[in-house]
Every structure is written in C-alpha cells, then in structure tokens.
Image 1 (tube, rainbow, N blue to C red):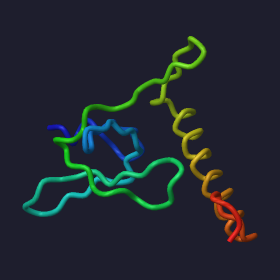
Image 2 (image 1 turned 90 degrees about the vertical axis):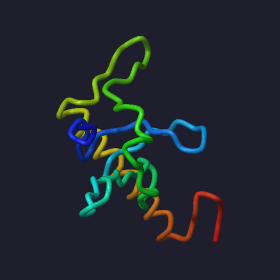
Image 3 (image 1 turned 180 degrees about the vertical axis):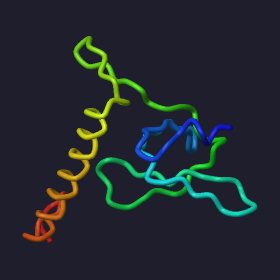
Amino acid sequence: MLMKKYRKGDIIIYSLERRVIAHSVVWILRIKGGAPCFIIRGSESDACDYPVEPKQVLGKVVSVERGGRSIGLCSRRAKMLRITHAWLSRLKRDFFEYIGITLGGLR
C-alpha cells in the first residue's frame, strides 16, 4: 500500500496544477471510509497546505546533491537538521513580526 512507504517527517514530491512540489509530511490523515491523505507544509511556512491525495504523490526525497556530494536525508542527523532549520525559520519570522517588520517591508 502506498501510505506505508511514507511517514511523518518525510519530504514528498507531489504534482499540483502541472507543477512539482516538495514539502514535508506533517501528518497522515485517515478518515473512516475515505481515502487517506497527506497534510504537508513547506519549511518556510507555519501553515499547512491543502491535503495531498496519494494519487498526487510522485515519490520521496531521499538525498540531495550539493557541490558534487550526495547528502542523505533519511539519517537521524539529517532529520534533526531539518527540524532545526524549520524551527529557526519560524523563530526569525516571529521575531521580525514582533518588532514590526514583515519580509515585504515595514508595517
């Protein structure tokens, strides 16, 4: 079954309106009698996106290549780095909102 291949915290690639998008799985929603779906969020966002159906999923990101070097994303270290990056991004955004600056300029 498709849902067993993906878990909370995985980065999935899915199609949406002729685009390919990669986001983290926040949780997997299973509604009784209905098809399960993924609740996803981008690393720079504090809000979840619309649910993604299994038929939209193209695959899971397992590594990234930078500077000719392959970086695995399934290790414990990689997951901790993703969590830290997401946390720091939200902290930075909240700080700027607190002092009255948005990323688009002054309020």
